[in-house]
Length: 202
Ligand SMILES: [Ca+2]
Image (cartoon, rainbow, N blue to C red; front, side, top):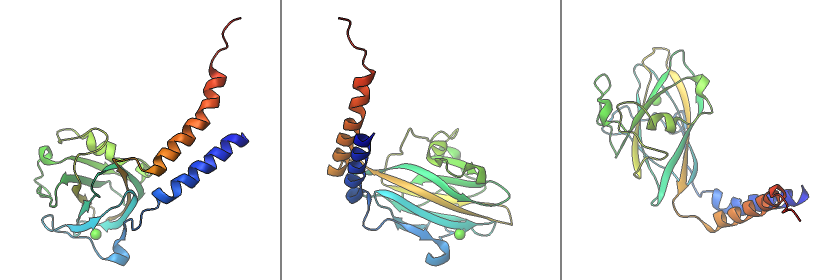
């Protein structure tokens, strides 16, 4: 037990330098300004490897469009819903590139990478996997290919809705810190495997 704790501590120590990005995105409409309502001129934002947050609100007069640019050699690996309010489900969709070409009311699903509706009961879930498996959309498995994506958040109810997303970005290239974590994980797992291996009969 002590041995496992020591290795876990070592893993956390190894994790800290690489898991703390210099300037991750933490965008809040209240303090950073309303996100664009123009699909052809979305708010341009950059995300870093690790967790990035966008918090905003939408209603029938205010749609939100934003473009996320990923670092080179990184991919979008999850969109965790961290907050959601409103009396009706909120709509989320995205496309590759720096604009959103499908207009509300006439969106051709075949031109969307994916789409999803979410509610407060979905808080804590990964919306990326729902987006990737949406019927008639382009879709993807695990992570969408590309380094620039434009998102559309929509809520037609007059009461509106608040939302908060955690965009998790992973690097395609393992860092030295990642190797240290893997080594620590193997060290933790090995004694268990040894115990689980049946002894040969004499
Ligand atoms: Ca807004």
